[in-house]
Length: 316
Ligand code: SF4
Image (cartoon, rainbow, N blue to C red; front, side, top):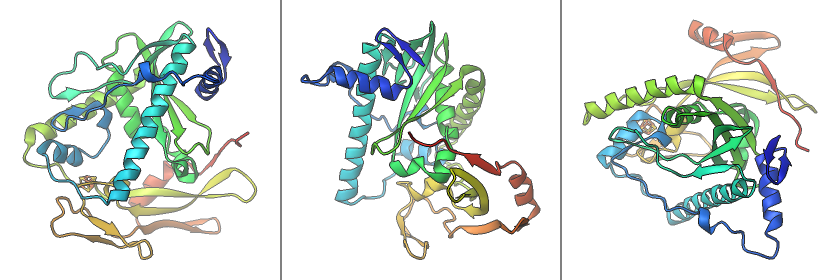
């Protein structure tokens, strides 16, 4: 429950809804909460902690990005605008509830070339916490994706902010479906656990920065668990394990190429700045009945640390 001066709310979603209801017949009142957004490519960004280090170094070097079609650019622009809108609406609702302390302020105390700006600091039950909104596509609420929250990169980002915000106990990460088809999912990351891994990651990125123009390694292929939904039940069981290229490479602006949707084979242009191993996924762990088969001992060791089954609560 979130206690506010407007009453108790079971979630940020119901707080936002209550705020929107109060605006009946008026504008949404988000103008005071809007902010200008610029991206300084020559800096290191806390918001990119956990992202591919090589990609961050291409940003710093000003490497030319893949040219996108006009329709893709239009889709991306709309996606970002919806994301900003959700943030502004949330700040307005948090303020209406009397729990907003500050929003979109730069992080102080960062050494050059680092930069960062948090979403919001809120006060709940007498303690300060960060609120960080992640607007997400509808499909990212389903199956394997849903299970991957909170993402490691997001925990690192929160740890990055929290390391410079004295007195802030932790961070509420809210994943919000920008298509409106799924209820938001919220997770809590405490300062105690998030700050140290973020500092270590920052050190690694600083080392990459100092080594420029030498670039860090490309993302390696990785093992990925795939789950299957049980019939008539919101339970998922580990079904098979793939060795796949890192998902980030598939979306990277420094890989000039495209994937054939049918064959899954990637064509990479000769001029592509980065050329990671984009071979199609290879199954390296599977079962027949109760017996599991693995391609190597490494996969066995890795599989032992995966969750065998998980359950998802029904949407109301
Ligand atoms: S293609 Fe992959 S490895 Fe290369 S910069 Fe992009 S994310 Fe990193």
